[in-house]
Amino acid sequence: MEKSQEFADVAKTMAKIDVCMMQTVGEHGVNTRPMSNNGEVEYDGDNWFFAKSDSTKIAELAEDDRVQLTFADHDGPNFISVWGTGAVVDDVELKKKLWHEGLEQWFDNGPEHPEVALIKVTANKIQTWGDIGERVIE
Image (cartoon, rainbow, N blue to C red):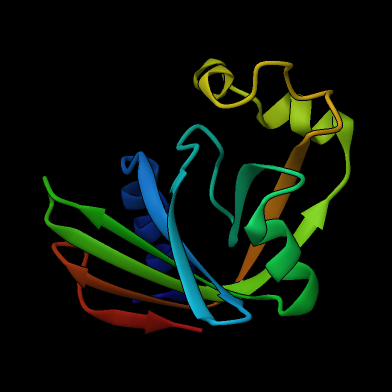
């Protein structure tokens, strides 16, 4: 299968999954937490997440940019693991563009507030299992 088709399959499956688990590396090892996946954003190898600017994950990314994301589509069943590098992006216009109404439950003041940070995870390797096939994309 052509790499662009493999990527399209991953993107289509990923868009259906509301929450993924994000792992970062901290002082005491790997930290894992659920993160809202914005399926409205067309996946191009970058995942985008909102976080509070004073959160542990933001501090950890400043020290070690390695990130792993895991997605589980229980209706599929499909599973996706993404290994990549994370960075904090300070771009108010991009935050406004990626913002969706559901984020208001975590961020009272909207995307323009300084407490709202944007994390970009750029994929280095993707592995899939399930109905979308077992494969590795690098």
